[in-house]
Length: 398
Ligand code: SAH
Image (cartoon, rainbow, N blue to C red; front, side, top):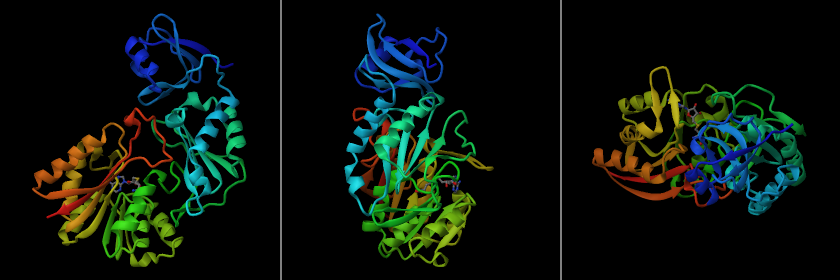
């Protein structure tokens, strides 16, 4: 039986949630009462016991749960989830109708009214990510609703909880048709091979769609491109389809080599004419500097936090240094595409890192464009902290 619990919020948290904030932060409650069970339906109240909202309990990095409804009589059942999925679909009709983009985010957690749950659409298949045990306890009702509203060919899932951020190897198949992987999806006419049943990631990060398009359409023609932290080489593909003369893709993970070759192959690109390096980006910077290599365009898309044998890297501390290293191997009028998905700092702060790196190296620069989450990654409008992606195109003026 699912637990129902009353949760009395501290005044500041009550005020914030009343005004529309969807996340129940760890410090929203005094913490004297025994915590509810994961998945408990919460009646959130103010100090005098007045109803504010209905939520669920689910521990997930900085929160202990999410608001689900602001109607006291609303039940959290498959009808509720179906309603949310329908609203989410209605916001994305442009993607349904698109012939040249077949992969997009169908449901984006708190932005679509259910924190802790995302659904990505890949050529007819749904990939559901669960971010807490609490939300996962609604699995049956959610899948019933998803099947009804999205009518997918098949459903796959990723469990992203109870694992210290580590992915637990498992069969991610849920129901419907089993996909044949790699599955080919299109994005603005580019092909990408994805695998919904091969570890934590699928082969492509859908939130970078507009950045790939901008690189292909406006920046790549006739340029040499260095793609760092390249994963499956999606930015290299975009650059080559935009007329780049040559790409170099650098990633530490061994799987990046066959995966990058695969992305090139499905786009008719001869991989042998490209450089794919399986190595630490920081070692590559040294190598490139020693060999006097310069690139017209450099893509920087590091993980928020990375630990290698030699060192740790954190975007919130080390981004200026990363940019300074990059500048040494960027052409005089080159372009740096600096990206981060670290949710702990704002676009303004990110730009201050950029400013610091360029002023400390006495290099002039001009920002030519900026990107944050694309239209299908809906976020709560009044709370830009949920718009975690920050990408800045920086023209170097040496
Ligand atoms: N830019 C990619 C996504 C990057 S994901 C894209 O758009 O698809 C982050 C990648 O960084 C992972 O593939 C990981 O293997 C790699 N990585 C982490 N630390 C690294 C390091 N020190 N050197 C090289 N690659 C690293």
